[in-house]
Image (cartoon, rainbow, N blue to C red; front, top):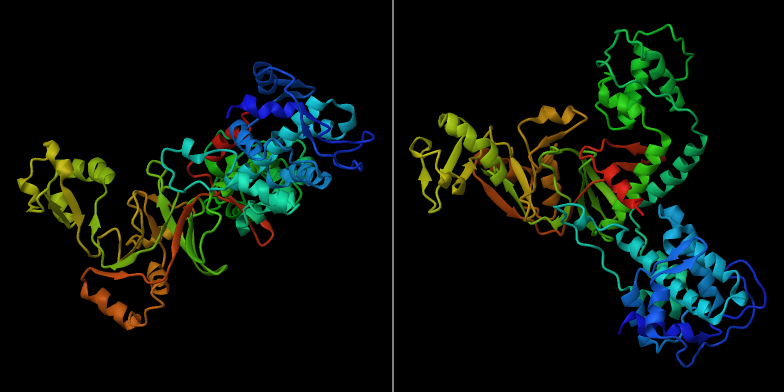
Length: 545
């Protein structure tokens, strides 16, 4: 059925009745059933009116025309919003969208404010339009809460999290049948603790934005500043740190030496904002100092949107990797059992966002070289020096599975790209002693690394896409905790053998590789560097219209 058929609703009479103009949802007169009467306008005229209806604040734009038609046709075009409580609750639900980082006007707030406050003063056609707009507002609001305003699959080439599904029509029916529209709305709002924390941060930073006046801007030109060096930017750095609550002493513009007390303040600032905590005032630190509370507010809004993209139910037991913060958490029944530092993909070889389930653990793993690394790194190196293959303890197999000598291969041939390159288990293997596998199209997994000193750095986008995990043997041990035969002695025996050993996981453990750059921790808002430079682009899309 087309939209024009739906818009028979234009001919509903007395959809709402009200004795006098009041604030939205406060009318107290008895509700009357709407009556469908003979069509008063042509389908073309109706369609034209509804596709672009001028009102005081702009133009009504229905977001769910097809679904509206389906909903009302199944109801024989009987109105939904004849009950004052339903209208009130929906209006209030739209108003409070701002608490979730959404813009109430996206849900026809201005139009509904005018029409609901003046039901007795508008004609029957306008009442019918109000009915339709209320339904459209409910559908749009609950859809945005459930899966976000934006579709990440339209933004990113690689996105491995399925969109959250919801039966909007069934959700509306539930809210109406239960006479509880707010309960229907609340049912699709994310419940994860990170999302709840972001809401608290949103409220705080909205207040901070109001208080921020004339933030000090530090020149980003010049070399990095190290302890005991002199720099004319030092007074401005102190002023900016004072504005942000990291410097309490008096500021003398004549003192331009970077001393110990200032370095301590800088380190505290760097630690909170996910910068390398080395005390050096480099370009990254200055750029972060120059961010205003408004910038941070926008970052929070972006991360609230991200959490609407992520799975509603992460599972009873799961591993969650925050790519941006280089952290992994093992969670069971809401309790965090373990936290590990991680290394993730570089900006050129990003770790993808996706969800999967752990299948098995491999001790003394071999490493099959991924296509990108094989093409861009290994083959060029071997072309220059075939002994590179021997030094790296690589084995090469042709398409028939035959092992080949690097000195017998024609490295200029295109056939080389079809060969399988495998690094055998050992001290030089980049996977270290163990890898945790959850088969996926991206060939991504958790693993050990021989380069353990890199975990001491704050910025750890160091890998080719997989996630290196500090103390990963402890994580593997917890994943095998329901299999007593794999105790410490047995695992040590396997490791000492040097033999590649695969053990199937019998617990159900989900894995979620997600990306968020803001969170609330113990009442304090924390930030991570936007290593993949995604926040600004998302905010631009969120505010595009």
